[in-house]
Length: 188
Image (tube, rainbow, N blue to C red; front, top):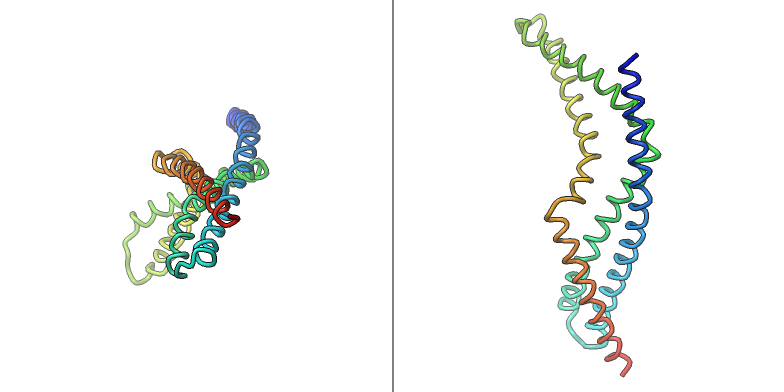
């Protein structure tokens, strides 16, 4: 009974934490999506400007547009990661059940691994031993899928990605200035 109370309390704590994080993640993801779309449009404009209006080669224009898309790629990555966080509220009840089932499966598979160590491997039990190994591989793959859900959060908080994000903001500012200058040149 106390285990059930602890899981209920932990589920409530997780839900309360998500209720605080979700509005912030939604707000940030909307702003980052606007940044990404604007950066993409500016990169397309620069490619067109260089090729059509400035008579540069298509290779040079494509390189300029491609380099201009780097901040957009960082923004889109952050946007999709934040969207995963927003979608967690819909998955919280399923997540609790999945963790409970996974821990039970892990305990069962751990017993199977211990049985493999105890048994002598011979021709008669080779088939069952091989099956246990494939069951263990399935467990590792399932664990990797669950762990993959948390790796997105580590991406948001890693120092390298934060440096990339700040650099992308600086790149967006530079691209906005270049956009204004090229628009003035195109109009004049």
